[in-house]
Image (cartoon, rainbow, N blue to C red):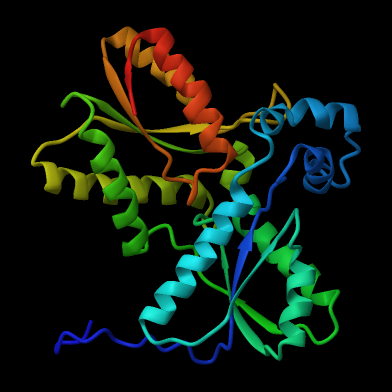
Length: 298
């Protein structure tokens, strides 16, 4: 906002479009195995195993992530319009329809020459950053005349992101005892992937620690008191013997309960929307753990 109180018009030069790049997800039960084939392409996993892995999706009739991405695109369009910015917003997925290549072809046909690509992953890692770049490159290479793409930086520390997560945490804390422990939850990744994320290594875990500190500072200022808080992880996969970032959220909840902690707030700050890792791993599995332990939960 300008000193006069008027809303400033953002400068989007030199871009003539915005592209939201999402992971994608199955929108029906019939989509589950084909979607997982895309995710695991080249790994030789049989459909029988994919069907087992997809049990979470079957339970919910698919994934909410595509619909949430549509809502995100609509909100971005609305915000741009409110700031008097006339620029189209497209979206494409790495692993499901609308596929990135199809979206880039449509953008080309619409006359788009240069676009800003914004991923739905806010942090640096292979799966959350470099793989998105690789998929964008492959999609652009497959389309003759595809628009030039520039990818926005990792936005884990953007003030708007910090503020949004803080507001959600404040609202949830109001229903819990004052001594509740806050568990900041994100997707676990292999330790080797974290070690190679970012120029200096461990960017993934470091960025989460930095974001957690920024949110906690705002919470403390708003509430006038401090809360015990920790970084925990969910959605571990891979071979049993491989080392992934820990502690697991359910394991840590059990340890906290044994220490006498009576309530926890789970803040899924590693995800920009409530997709499967949130509605199953947290809202279902972690909630069941809290119920088993008799812990207050939000």
